[in-house]
Length: 319
Ligand SMILES: [Zn+2]
Image 1: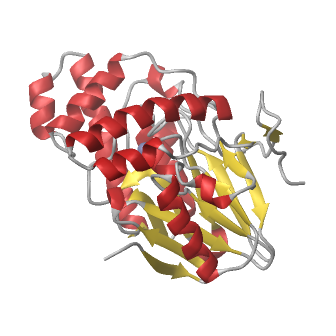
Image 2 (image 1 turned 60 degrees about the vertical axis):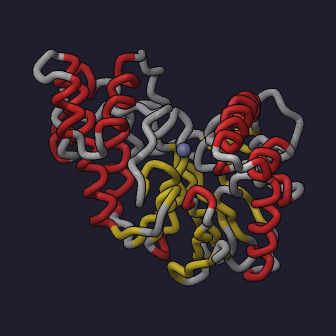
Image 3 (image 1 turned 45 degrees about the horizontal axis):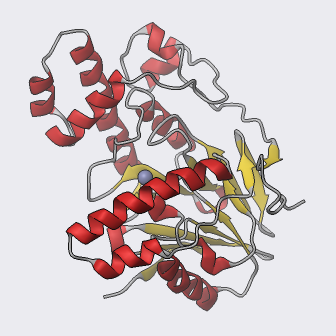
């Protein structure tokens, strides 16, 4: 069984991939289309680009949900294109370099030499258009929204909303079939970011890995993330031990251990932060102390500014 398309709504598809159970996206308008993430290697990207061309001949733009390699190492196959992301190109390249080495070693340990070589020879394509807050992209007859969302799974998460189809591409903010990945995450910020993203009640939510889910599934996962956050806070205050927290953690002991480690590190400032009122905090179902809420970013009134990637002459945002 290879990778396959699943149609979610009118001209909205998810590409379900064997490798890492990845979910890539495609939204097609009357004039152009948006490709959401590009796969684990250049070779995977070629397969994906070919599959996109089986569905539409329209010009494409690309959105990166975040800087983890499996979401953007396939881009070389797509040629010259606008590539949207929250973080800048230099950041993507430095993270990509580290991830390439780490994952090549991991694949070799699994005796998957071909997979290790495939990421080794993938030409990395950094983003050339930055999203600050949120922007709408007019694909012709339909507008999709690219929205900065975090701190959450990483410090540069971006989701794609397709309002007319009720679809939210959530990147790794949600994960189906495996625990959410906390390795670069901000456990106290993550759950209410997801709650906030769900506030328009999308019908279908596409996690970065695993099958698409519905609104209620996504809301449940956000509730479990809130429980992880609460346990981290209680361990920090000495109310429960790390062992107790691990034993009762929603995503299992290993994920809890990583989440605890992450909360011991200082978090960077929340990008474009507003301040969530305690009332909003309660609505989100997360009980944490006031000092923490003061750091919480909300995106009720996103700034729709677009600026070209800094420090690069590669590409301009489309006008
Ligand atoms: Zn990720």
